[in-house]
Image 1 (cartoon, rainbow, N blue to C red):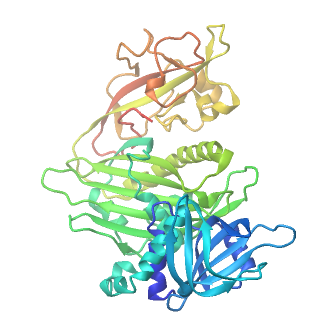
Image 2 (image 1 turned 90 degrees about the vertical axis):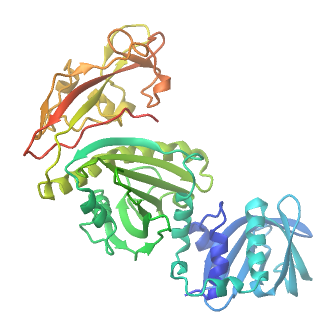
Image 3 (image 1 turned 180 degrees about the horizontal axis):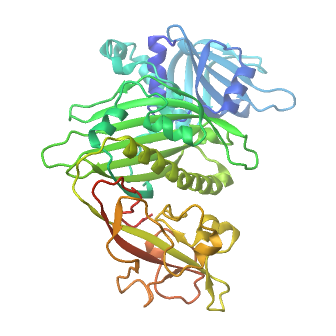
Length: 511
């Protein structure tokens, strides 16, 4: 394990807002260049060093297992078969003097010899940019203060050593939604899910294979699931917050340059606020995941958020799933591809989420609850065959994917009420929603087109250039538009004594 002083130095770097863990490629490059087998690589920064000429390369910051033994290592790019290299012991650094334009001067206690140079250096000028300068200044500001922090935090159980990668995931989870909003991909009402029973499952000391999140990722194909110990991060407001890490391996959809499977680390935060009188129970589960083996996998974090709100009886729950993608480093031209792939996979996993929740309703003992009325919603999608015709058909282009089923839920995927045995040709030929409810609900009317009289034409259609999820991009003018949609709704009432079908959307999706 890291020594106490080294651990505090590592934590100082991890708490920087733009800190990111080293990638696998950077870790392998550091190990091959420097024989520091008993140290942990914490940060890697693009850097240039002036030594007669300017050498471009990378600055590596690592810490050892005893005391504050760590190193600053630089390796430049190879020029004419020689590359500038040097290694500075952390304890040999007397001061770090910040300059302008991301340049810092590292003042040494004892001079060092750089590989490829013939003179000793008492200081080194490093141009590491804002990220690297902030890291060096913060690191050695803490070091100059001695170990006072260690004495102040003696006996604090919450400050146990954490994996660098895990802390990066938790830092990403703290980014406010105002800075980077979540995209809602699912909203359903689930009658029959007891509040207290589900809370107890999420807050249990141990998560086994039957636990909610472990079962969810297992249905997604995860193997080798390992759940770390629970960390209690509760505050004085009465909100209970539990954090734990989950490591596993999942298959990767076929894609260029991607492996068949990747290791994933997920930091799960369960938040249960205190409930006052006449307030509804609620639970928030936030899962921040990083894939280790896909291209640029360490450069971004996929964050899922499950919000569960129960009614006054504590037996009917509204579940909202939202997702956002946080880029820790640049991924170049792959950014758009990563965004579309993540959104597609998240839409697919929504069906698995419903299956896991349904199981908990079925396995729950019958609970007396008030009869509820819900409104089911389904989107009908069509695409114009050509811009100069008025022939509208179900979406037919290859990139339309699940939209080719015509009848979609609020996340624009095949509606879960559509029978599995229904051929797509039969579904798209229907003039009304071809949906079939399960037991537990009775129809209070019939499917009707929903209109508000201003954003759609007389038949309820809205038009746009593509199948956007943002309502602002849809209107009632069809000129020059290739796509159209209209919303069908129907009311249902829960029947007593029957297991309910939980798939009922309660609001329109707005992204």
